[in-house]
Image 1: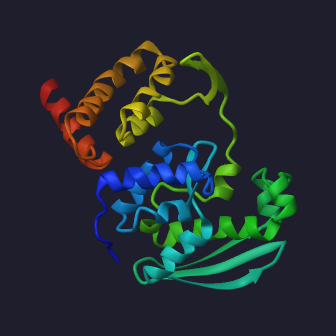
Image 2: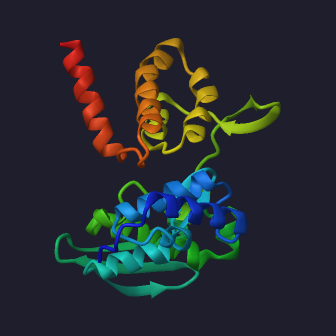
Length: 250
């Protein structure tokens, strides 16, 4: 159900309060605001982002129970065949995507290099269930969780090589990223600070990749500074930007 739109100024105040509270793992107002804007775009109240999402290793992650709840609210269903510390198996069904049986057991987890990790040793059933839910929901009705992972999945990502960068005299660790990932970060930036934080990472790229990002960076910065309202969503503004670049090239 679509909720009434919340003004951007109110979202900014909510984001500040959530980040200051420290209760939801959102460490900065920019993180909180970005997730709240995503929630509003999905027709949910912005505050639901603090409940449904976590930031793990700098990545937004949708809780597995929230993913399953959204799936069921959208008309999906799941029937659990096994739910133990050794094996979790469920049949996921949706009118638009049919049915599929998904099984995650410890043998599969070990084959994927996951079984020996600390969380897998302490909470095997929960970790298996999270993997099962994520795979089942995305296979049957991917619209519920486009481009998102569960916290359990993000925790299992291999850590990227880290580089040090200087920001206002502070030395901070930041995972290295590629041009494609930085394009997405630029497209999603809603504040000048969030955009400026990407500059040291852009400088880590090759000269060719850095040059490819300059126009995109400048265009997004212009959008943020030239409007009193929130910048257009990534999909909308990127479509116009890419179309303009193609026309200019022609």
